[in-house]
Amino acid sequence: MHEVRVGRSATKELEGLPQQVLTRIADKIDGLAKNPRPLGSRKLRGADDLWRVRVGDYRIVYAVDDDAATVEIRVIRHRKDAYGPS
Image (tube, rainbow, N blue to C red; front, side, top):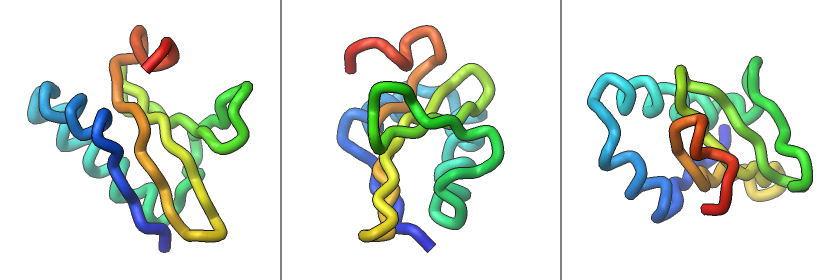
């Protein structure tokens, strides 16, 4: 089991989401504690530790540290905004 930490910027992004989307994202984040690399997750090119997972039109970008058993949520954004500068 991994400990999930949500970064400050990801927390701020969550605050503006509709409740239905927020519920789906929260379920996915809970699942990352059990399996940080679920089916459908992708490693981001150009980054050693960053992964992304889809939740509808939104993307969760996160880092996995298996040695410390942590998952750090870095970005939660709509897909059109997810991969640009944060």
